[in-house]
Structure formats: C-alpha cells, structure tokens
Image: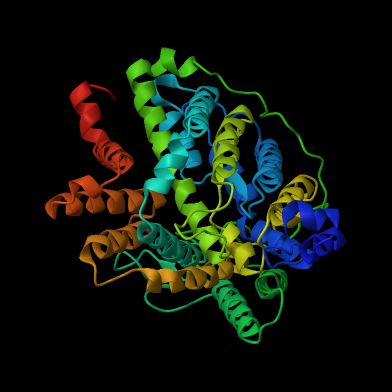
Amino acid sequence: MSTASATNAQLSPLDRFFKISQRGSTVAREVRGGLVTFFSMSYILVLNPLILSTPHDGIAPLGTTAQIASGTAFIAGLMTILMGVVANYPLALAAGLGINAMVAYTLVGMHGMTYADAMGLIVIEGVVILLLVLTGFREAVFRAVPAQLKTAISVGLGLFIALIGLIDSKVVRQGGTPLELGLGGSLQGWPTLVFMFGLFLTLILMVRKVRGAILIGILSSTVLAVIIEAVAHLGAFNAEKNKTGWSLAVPHLNGSPFAMPSFETLGKFSLLGSIDKVGIVSVVLLVFTLLLADFFDTMGTMIAVGAEGDLLDSEGNPPKTREILVVDSLAAVAGGVGGVSSNTSYIESATGVGEGARTGLASVVTGCMFFLSMFIAPLVSMVPYEAATPALVIVGFLMMTQVAEIDWTDLEIAIPSFLTIAMMPFSYSITNGIGAGFLSYVVLAVARGKVKQIHPLMWLTAVLFLVYFTLAPIKAILGVS
C-alpha cells in the first residue's frame, strides 16, 4: 500500500467524504466556519418575513410573519445542506435580498397579481435557469469570463459587502451628501458603540491569530447589545423618532426562547396565474429580469468565496462548478415552491471561509443551524445588525487584497475591472457591477480590433446585459407596463 493510500485509510469517513484534510482544513474549522456563516446571514430570518408579510391593496401575504420565518429557515436549511453534500463547497443559501423586495414591492399588486402568482414566476425562472445549467450553458458562460475579470468580481463584492455592513449598522447613512458618517458626520448612539466594539475586538483577535475571531466577535457583540438594551431600553431604529435605535432587531427576549415551526407557506404558488394578470409578454420580461439577476449574482458569489478560500483553479474556476450551479438553480425553484421567494447563494458565506471553512461540511453545519433556528427563532432574532455586520467589513478587507492580481497597466482589462469593482457598491448590485464589466470589456476589445479574441458567450452576455440595462425603454416601446 502506498503512503498516500495508507494516509487516506487513516482518515475518518467524514474527512474522506468532504476532503477536509486534502483542502488543508479540520472538522473544528469547518464547524466554526459554518456557525460564523449562519450568524452572519441569520438576519434573513427576520428580514424576509418582514418584507413578504407586507399586504398590498387587499392582497394578503401567504402567511403570518412567524409562518414565513419558518418557511424561510426550512428552505434555506434544506438547500444549504444540499450544497454541502452535493457540491462540497462552503456556500450557504437563503432567500435572496433584492428578489424578495421585487416580489413584495413590484410584482405583487401589479394588475392584481398575488403573492402566489409572484412565487409562480420564481418557480418558472428557477426551472429555466436549471435547464441552462443542465445544458452546460451557464457553466460555459462562467468559464468564458477572463480570469482577471473574475478577480475584479471578487474584489467588487468585497467592497459591496463592506458597504452593506457599514450601512446596515448605521455607521454610514444617507445625509447631507448621498452617504455620510453616522448622524451629521458624527458617530452617535450605543448601537454604533456595539458595532465598533465588535469590529475592533475581531480585528485584534485576528491580528493575534486567535481561532474563531469572527464568531467570538459576533457573539460578544450580541451579549453587549443585550446588556445595553436591558439597561438603556433603546428600542428599534426609526428614521423620524429614534435615529440611534437598534437596526433590524432589538436585542431582547420576549417570552419563551423556543417556538414550534409552522409551514403554512409551503406549496402556495400559482405557476401560470401571472399570465392571466399581466399577459405573456410581461411574464417573459419579468422572468428575464429575475433570471439575469440570479444568473450572475451566483457567479460573483461563487468566485468570491472560492478566491477567499484559495479553492479556485488557475483559470479562476471552483471545483464542481456544475454541481454548485445545479443546487443554486434548484434553490430558486425551492424558494418559489416554499412561498419564501427565490433562494440564492449568499456572499456572507465568505465570513465562514474567512474563519477557516474550506469544504461542504461548513454548509451542512450552517444548514443544520437553519433547521435548529425554526425552533429557537426568538433567540436568533435577538442578533441586531450592529453585532453581525462587523464580520462583513472584515471579510470585505480580506477579499479586497486580491486586487493586486489585476494587471492595472493593461487598460483593456483594467478599465472593465475598475467598473466592475466600482459599480457593485455604488449601484448596490452585484449584477450591475458584472454587467458594467462585461459590456466595457467587449466594447474596448472591439475598439482595439480584437474582435476574434472575444468569446462568443461574452458577446451574448454583453447583449443580454444591454437589454437588462435598457429594460424600461424596451417595455415602453413594446407598450408593456
């Protein structure tokens, strides 16, 4: 028996299945990383129900806030575990922010469209994108993107999630300028102190190479927030009456920490109901918009997480790319069927990778935490943005370090890379950043007479993004509302 075979035989079945040692990790690091990812994205258990429980012109939501929360946790747990087992990638999934807002504030109420109709559109979009994966199209597009542009996507995502962290914690707000520091240019309020405490505690622990720095930072900040709320009774943030209150969740417990889940939203979708309400042309355009956002958001997230964990090959592709994309596509379908909006890969997964996660075991841990959260939802909902978002800022820094891999002397790749990096945080959209990069890459290559060097799929995606960016005037020309 060879040395390699003997060594492999000594590994536990868990280690062999997830290739934990092969990827330079340990079970403890995977568990820790999975926990960090969960706490970094657990806000969705509060935010998704708040968004999808909004009534519109007499159109009722699919369930109560608690029922939507249970469905959100169930679908997220199921798909995240599937990602870990099938793709062996440290990527967690849950209801996608942006798409759920589009469902609640754009689709529902459009010519009488209900939440069930909107969920039917989500299912259709998920099926279409799954077909694109199974035919190899989605993976082919991913592989057609130049390696340095993939790096730019990762860097842009780093800035984007750092900005999300700063805005969600109210350290950066809208003010006299589009964005300003704190209130009137000054940091104010106990919640801001909690954010700064968590940020610098985590940074100090990282510099001192303490294991579990990000997880310790989140939990310590949450404990501090609970103590402050118990003494000061700050309450929730309100733009008019309480500008220094807690964002997303007030860190205190009302009643029992346990609750039985309810799955009232599961199966509440109408596959073709939207056609009767808005017509086939509108349905096609709406599905196209949902599809393009899902298609490229996942590409960016997959690259960023892989780059952070050194899991990409020389061309910037992760292992089991097709399996990752299949599970992500199924998650869109599952979200619609579950009545909780399209589920997609979360960039917050990078926080777990920053903590050491390298395999799908971390995703299994995160998924199990989502299942557990169905029973301890009151405890999970205690974590305010101010306690969780320092992790996003820190991971943003870690992802930003990859900017050195871009050749800034080559303007043909440097300019598209810059636009990709800048447009993600500035337009608050992963898809917009990728689209700006792709379009400018094709335009500059044509300007330099290098048409033959442009991959056919880059041509196609550039055209699709051109349609995406001009969708409003296209609708106007077609007479579609």
